[in-house]
Length: 470
Image (tube, rainbow, N blue to C red; front, side):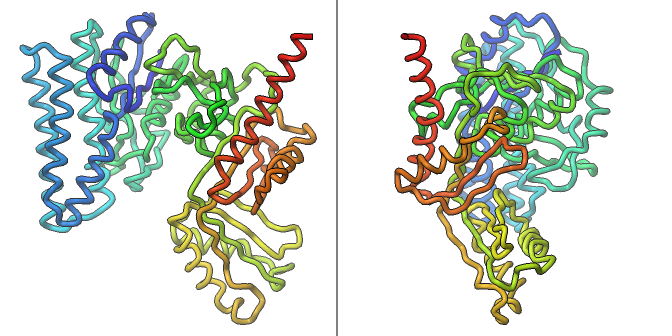
């Protein structure tokens, strides 16, 4: 059993879908497969736009739905012989009429909820999987189409649902059709009460890993429009190159710190089942991509990648009255948690006089207000300083298993940035020594990533070339 996931760019249009079919035929997989597909590129954003317009009493959501119909009908007309188009066109129109009815309810009745938004967002994968299934049938790839909502059960957090793994695995094992090729929409799921939920943006990767783990697949392959995971974001670092092999933990760190090719929750189900993950390029299938396993082959470089998260807000709580007082950190994190704010970064001075946390820029003000309210009495008594907020920052991280117990890496990192007058606002290193993270000003982020990448990758490469030449 193999599980393959194809992202939005891989199903963006008729030509891309034909390329998927070519990949499957060329590989000539000799075993059963589950193919998980995302919505066509850009469609999820269009669906969110439909919801927002309807919620704002803007009737132009009708125009967006018309654009969705045109996009999907064009793919059908280019993929499927005319005499076979009527059924799949009818299914697409039925789905879009359902979508329009839901949006009209939002528009007329102010029916606003996360549950309705999740249902609207689910139509992208329902549309794309329906088209892919029929197209594959006409490419000599007979298949069975399933609805992932019949298999993946979650909690009631509709827009970023948590999977009930026990129930989900049981359903997949019991109900999964014994077909040579199964097509499944990614991203979508259902709650215990039968309502549509979604697994968060990027959740199609997670869908694929759930199927892979439940079916004890030999391998999961995630196909996108890049040649695997890179040593840095190639849009920011021209010298970035694909990484041949990574450990699960390295991949998770890089994904968390901005490597968009992989949705971070994807790794967890694979680790428990020890299932390898391949990252491949649909449009360059001959490239070997990136292999992610528990024990990758060791390479020359102790650092595997340099990542960056932009648009970060830094909040600091400080004051002499914090020293030796138990419960300060608990109060701080509890106040932030009440606003459902995700913390990316934490650091505390050894003197206990300050604690610094980082979150997304748009969450900075709510966090500032929550902390100011929580510590109002302490601030008034001068035990705690007014809470400070620094927006428009970036977190830069270097990641690699080989960093463990290897001296000098942090020193090199700080020396490089210091010599180029880049101010480091905060520093954190995990106890595993697999990640060193720093916070810099947003305008210094790209330069910081390039300097670190050049130092840890290009310099070493040049030294190796010199050694070979001598």
